[in-house]
Structures are given as C-alpha cells and as structure tokens.
Image 1 (cartoon, helix red, strand yellow):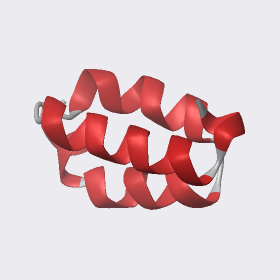
Image 2 (cartoon, rainbow, N blue to C red):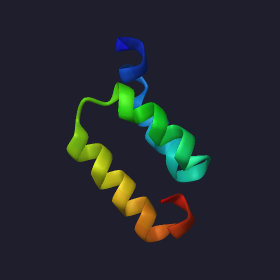
Image 3 (cartoon, helix red, strand yellow):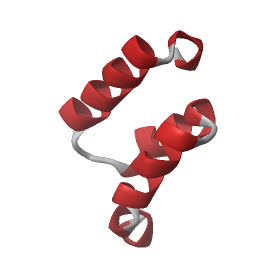
Image 4 (cartoon, rainbow, N blue to C red):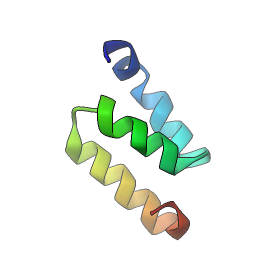
Length: 52
C-alpha cells in the first residue's frame, strides 16, 4: 500500500484524463484522506457527469 500511496498524484491525474471509475476504485483502498477523495470525485462528477 505504501508504494501505491506514493503515486496518488499520478492516480488523480489519471482519474481526470482517463478511466475515472477504475482509478477511484483503486483510490478508495490506497488514499487514506477520505476528504480529498470525495473532493476530487465530486469535482470530476460536476465536470463530467458520466464519471459518477
């Protein structure tokens, strides 16, 4: 898990530009900051309704 946490910025970048659903599935397990996860999920959903 620690190695995955080191790449959180990369995962969030992929969520914005790629397959958001798959990336958020991964982030639910590796990002311990639930507020950050919810912020990005909400921001992306507002920008890309299909990413919900």
